[in-house]
Image (cartoon, rainbow, N blue to C red; front, side, top):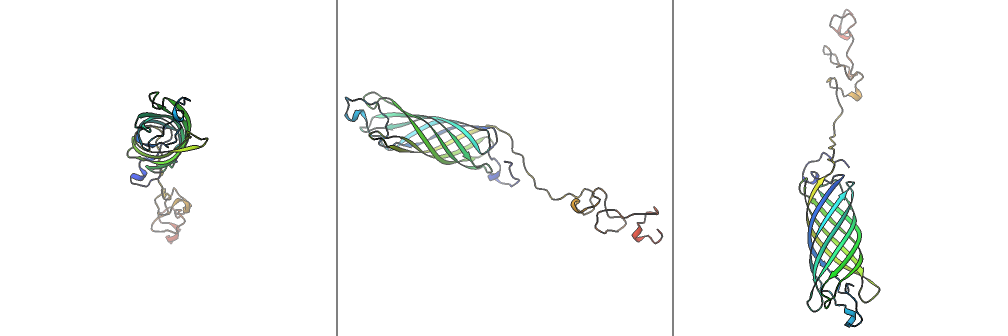
Length: 245
């Protein structure tokens, strides 16, 4: 939608239609200790499953395209550096996409996300091996469009994945902070509210002026209909004050 004529940072850099955003993000993933990411083997204790520790720092890259100011599509890929029971390190990677619904009138842009993708783990075979599972994720957050081309952003997410030792699903929470660049997009048209016009400058606005292109004031006579007074004899003195019409 068109930006209003209100002033201040809050209204200076709203989302643009057709905009592309490129972001680098970092944060923490809180993998559920029952996260089902391991290479199962019948000859290992618990088939090779090891519980995950609770905090894993992560980094990733995001690209988004917004065909409308209120909605866009984003793709992300990233890696979290986790540990499992026993202290061994593993890498949890993600590749995911989602739709993003956002408020489009401010430089401060709250949003919702909903999507899915794949979560995987990479580690030596004697740790948990390698595995990949599908996931669904949703979350909330906000962008802060500092300038027309630079952006900060925060996300809070929940990634829903299969559980390791049951048919249940588990929640894996995530907190992200991003820095990003904004490219392209149509410039928002400024809507300037104007008062009614007075085309002939006679002090009567056009909606109330019966003669909007002819000023009424002639020789001091004004009856507020917006039309000039007649001068029947052409002597330069209008009829209402002419003793000899």
